[in-house]
Image (cartoon, rainbow, N blue to C red):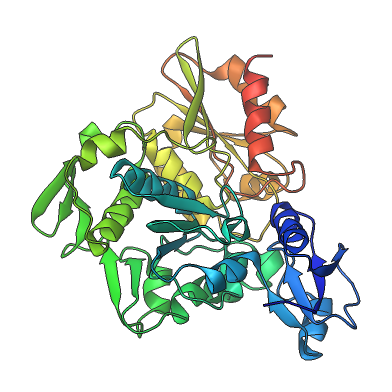
Length: 415
């Protein structure tokens, strides 16, 4: 496909390394670039890592000059075995749990399953391999320039995020939705009926199946229902905490139903799934105080979902704040006001200061670091309380990624 073409690889992240390996294995001519402003004059093809914004000025110039743009995801999809069923899952939140749970259940059912993308191995690493099903988690960066449609496409939800890469929240939404815009007739889109942004932006889409819809798979009075038929008693699901995770399960079951997979033993298969790290993960219990790592939370909406998951706690100390993406915390703070006697905000830089200014009359403590926040909660918390790291913001100003932030939280507990 790329024989005798001069290839530029832009970016040295995880996918950049996989693209480099792909070039070496296929004996291609390549040059690796890093940075914001690069000159791609004379190159025929650009292999771009997801971290390089599609709206970067150097990239836009190169595209206008006629360079051919490829991603690891597009390379994999262009060369996949046509008999292999592909499922892509994106969304602001829940995509990792949803995709991991789907792959887990398909494996439990005895299928040969490939799984990667934004989680695990980049898709280009799977070129030449074939499976019964391939489950891909895609970020907004990977969806934005996607050329090849998946057999089934899932969008868990849409909330404001990643304005630094997409430049506007509207463009972020549309780049996510490119996943379903490029489908062929008959390829199904599975969407969240309860998510307003998704509904408003997909009114004219065809071949749509909704979850969280009373006529399809949804939550109702302690059960996951398919229309009027009960599928699962949610009290039996103890490994995935919170209503948002039950909604993720609804999305997974909707995919399985569309794939005509037998749901027999589904309760046991869900129960055998191990929740992912840094996603409402209980990392310690000290003196009756539960410490919960939800560092994956980078939006106010996910912080709100985390608070609701622990509504039965005596008191919650919420560690909130991080890199500022101009997100609106008013809905989160409205919930805190309604439960003001049970929640204390431990405000982290950088957005912590802005949150404190909006949180007039609420219990707030402003700190300089995650470790200082944990130290404060040790002096305040009592048995039956929860210390919850659910920042509602990215970590880029202080940490390499959310995993590093979560590990810092866990380490501070034992100091």
